[in-house]
Length: 424
Image 1 (cartoon, rainbow, N blue to C red):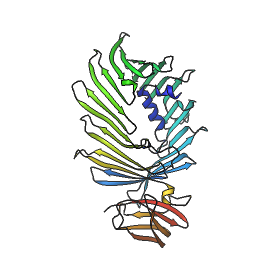
Image 2: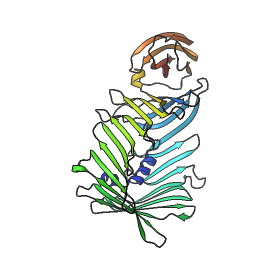
Image 3: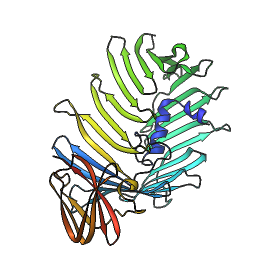
Image 4: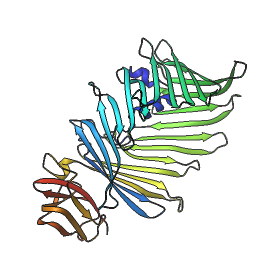
């Protein structure tokens, strides 16, 4: 079944992945190792490049064993008045597949129904209809007796429909794909794509043809896939127009630590598309996308803990004013094992830590009596422990190195872990 899914054409496969995974994982790009701890909180800093100000968020996760139950995002830019900006509730089937996602703030639902294990037959998204109790249908899939996807229909709105149908060869690979759209009652000319494979079942050709107004196919383009020496570490795709003239060549180089893609146009232009770098455990550590001019557009850096869990993510984007890659997003992943030896932490204790970022004095304040405060580094080392026995405390952090720390606050025997940044 996995083999059949992997040979679904890229366009519809991308749609399926985007729909099925949206909101279900903590981070879709960073790659925690299987079995690694799950984060309790992501401390997020958003840098506004236009106003030169920062926004601060806590993204808090709750689990039932290893299944995500709720994801709540708090905007804590104003620490005195945190605002809930998103609250998602999750349910799963008995086999662990997603059943529903409910955004309680706007009453928006994602609901999944399955025909075969791991494949959606019907997907709903939107606000439930008062009569049926279901949101509008967003995606329907049909399968044959071999569990092969034969038709997929995507409903963006009642007046915008995308349809793909598939037929397969004896090896279970997609032989033909028929694609069309319906916009405001008008059908676009259907596009038929024919796929060919070599003896190793690798795709070597994809021809696109469009049905004209007379019902005949007009050849439009041809993509040819080359695998030198049958080595998948490097392959190229030649795109030809309807007259057989070369439009461009896409080259992809893959090794254990690098995956890069570039386009070479017939006029000699070369444009980088994507560069990914991996560590020795096959975890993504850097990803760069490029503009049409060939200059970098975004860059993401990922760091991991020794147990394979995600530690930090940094996001950079090209500043419109300076044209330089500029930091715009920081995600710091917080785990119970890092912040406390306690088996349970409470994120909703009435406590504040400010200013955040801080440079010299950090204030910890609560309406209740604080027993004590521990300052813990990102690596889990306890740097200081302060007995408070009052409703507030001031901690001198002037000698701390710049970076992320945690204030573990104990109130009536319960603990809350609040991240803060030190900037000098």
